[in-house]
Length: 310
Length: 273
Ligand SMILES: Nc1ncnc2c1ncn2[C@@H]1O[C@H](COP(=O)(O)OP(=O)(O)OP(=O)(O)O)[C@@H](O)[C@H]1O
Ligand SMILES: [Mg+2]
Image (cartoon, rainbow over all chains, first blue to last red; front, side, top):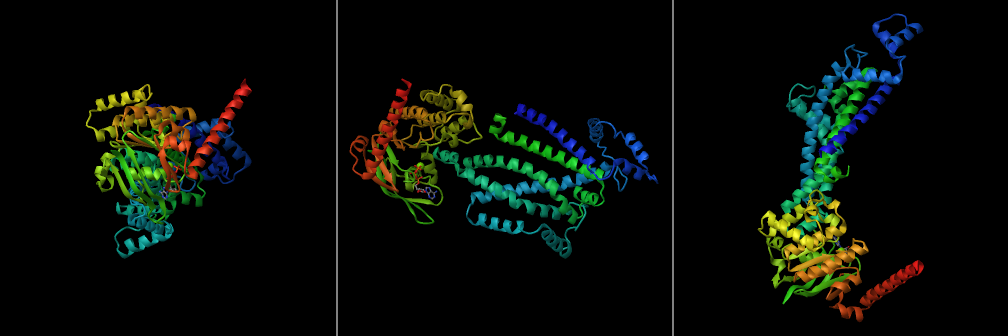
């Protein structure tokens, strides 16, 4: 297992290089010349071609691509992503807190998504075709097919406006979490509990359960084995789910005015604030890779086959 | 004294009411090996599972199934569970899928013996090791620490036979235990079944498509077609003079096949010589 973990982690390093390099190239695709941007930012009244060329060499932009990439990477590692075009603040001073807020929302939501999906999936599989299975599946079908906007509006209308129980927006208290988390969880549980359910069912019908029964094993012991094998699928599915939730909080954050990455990026895209967009892409890509690696490691910890064949 | 008596076994699908096995009756004397043959879908596996009371949800059966004179259908679930493995032992077709993929083989074997006998862990291990050596698994400790996907189909089949050897059941039910194996391995596994019969005095139900294997191992044969028993009798008689046209068809197609096979092999020999 340790050997596997080591090899898996070593593999991440080249991947991170590729990702950061691509993000770096992305920078060059922006329609504005960085030298021009800097001159504008410094408030230079007349921008001549010579001035631009001079600034370019001041900025080191006439050096080879790889050298510039190296420099850029080192500044990134120090969390220095440059200055926001709009506010003039360092990018990290805006992105850092927003990232933290989004991570909080993501992790709390993911926790409930995982908990509910496993609970509902297991109940449905064990009661396949009976009323708990049928009712859970139809309710979830109803909820999942509701547009996120509509659901959010309904919840805000009822719990915040009518009952005045929960805040409509912002992130001031624990109560602020309830509605955004509920909207995210409803959207995903419907998908993930089905995966758990079908993986439980295929395990329940597997030969090893029949042979276990034929050997006199108890239902309890067999259900534990089935759970363990079904959760192997779950671990990799959820490992992927967390980054997906992370990337998709944009809509919910905007509806509930959550001061997170989603809100920040939408504003940055509208204002063409390229340094923030670039840093967002980089941070999210790195987060994807890290979550993926962790889920692979967890997966290997529960699945002997993966561990041995890698 | 019959070890197992099956009388008027009917198996049907609950939802559609479709009959899957119709009015099937047969008996097994101590030490007897009964082969069940018949085409795919004729109800062989359902017959085996009904005896074990392991039909899936949605499949029902009726009729009297008695083990040493005791009617199994009136046993509580718990009592029936204690009979499975200890008195009625099943050997599966595909060893690869018969064991929990996330645990070593030894865990299954230990757990099974732990249910039926109060031996210490070390005793269980010693008995398993001896049985494994008896069925030709040379390094029992290594085999027990392996995961199912690390062993071959033939080895897993031997593991199941070894477990049966330790459990000493009254009846062994083997549902096509050699179908998933290549010809050479299948031959070796059949030999292990023959020796298992010699060692234990258990009765055996042996389901097979392969009439060559049936001739090697079975005392009596039961021929099924579309959920019904069309013929049963001593293996020798069935092979020499089947009464039912379907059995004659089975035997003759088998013989054509083996003649064809011999001719092929002969052809190869000629080509090589
Ligand atoms: N769970 C089930 N639900 C509905 N029908 C079933 C089920 N299991 C088996 N059957 C039907 O019962 C019939 C007999 O099945 P069975 O598995 O006993 O055949 P078999 O003789 O063992 O065939 P094979 O040689 O392919 O193993 C088949 O027609 C099959 O379609
Ligand atoms: Mg079958």
